[in-house]
Amino acid sequence: MSVVKSWSEPALLMSAAHCASIVRREARNFYYGLRLAPEPRRSALYAVYAWMRKADDLVDDGGADRIEQVAAFRAKTVRAFAGDLPDRDPMWPALVRSIRDHALELADFDGMLDGQLLDADHRPCREWAEVRHFCDLVAGTVGRTCTRIFGASDPEAMRLSTDRGIAFQLTNILRDLREDHGMGRCYLPVDELSRAGLDLPRLLAWTDAPRCESFMRSQVERCVAHYRSSAPLDGMIDGACRPTLWAMTAIYGGIARRIRDRPHSVVEVRVALPAPAKLLVALRARLGWHGASFVP
Image (cartoon, rainbow, N blue to C red; front, top):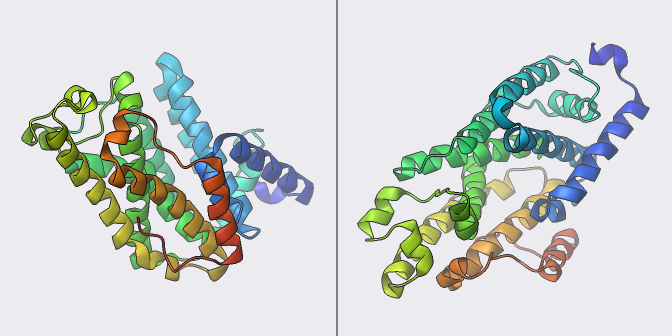
């Protein structure tokens, strides 16, 4: 079914509202930043998030045939990039418009799906290169897609947005150590743990505090280095979108800062910014009370 033939403003408005409802319900940290984006870019971001949520649910809940389900979803996404509505899911009209209006890249959506499948078939990352590859698939791809919607698409902006996405994902990895271990997963480089005389259970037990703290500080410093290296990105995107990027970075970077200040906290609680702090970030971003870029 060609989107050209079926395109209608009511259908687009319904699709955009559907995607927005998914973001409000599921996005948590991202919602505080995404809602600051001007229209129509805000709806484009919501549509991409709705697609990512669908992909994530297919992998998490698809059961034994999840590979086949992801393959079918990948084929539908290819059709969306060709300008078609693959089925009656209300997500598609908004996504197809976003693809068209912002010249989004199919390769990044393919990469996101590859990352989801890699995560579902999780194996410990032996070295940093494997961790970085995983982070690029699940987060660098998102960074590049959002940056295109923010109005930048040159190679340098793509490189910087990859670093920003990796910074976000490394923050998630450090924050979720206990939760991931409970699911039999470890995203820290095994060789670096070994050189530090640790494995994940010993790190989480924190029985050798100096050794554990030194290792965690090295990991969070790598994370902060990606925030630092990607700082010029904020000045390359459309000015109206800078509050959105700043707010998202301030929230994730704020978590990284808390871990840097108290490395032991990752084995005690799930480190997070409280809701009032997120609202303050959103307020500062909306009013322009912030610097050029947030670095933890």
